[in-house]
Image: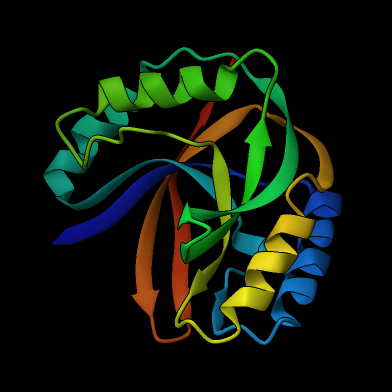
Length: 184
């Protein structure tokens, strides 16, 4: 049996999730054609692995257990879009830490799991809050994203990362933790 998996940093701070939910309401008010990511499942993907066999899962878990990474505090700040403001597919909230610990963790995870998933060239720490389904009201959406580009949601601590299973459903993805890895 194949499992669809990824490595992530979960956003566990309720006050930041609440602030993001309010910003999502403001963005929804643009009338753009968006699919919202529920605040309860917000996370930053460190590595999307994709489908693997169960026997591969054991090796992946073993490799992730060997990662020694520092816990860190980060600022959740800014709203932006991928791949660009001229062609918006995803609306995101940024994640910034002064010591680049999130970039170090991303690098460690990707090095450990280089045999799986795609190589990410330009990693930008973020959490997806919307997927854009069409060009409807895109000018209003762009304007609102620009207004929120330096919005500060708050600071939070990350002291663990997760190996997650993703099951795609018509109502949206369902994520469950396969394993949680503590950081130092």
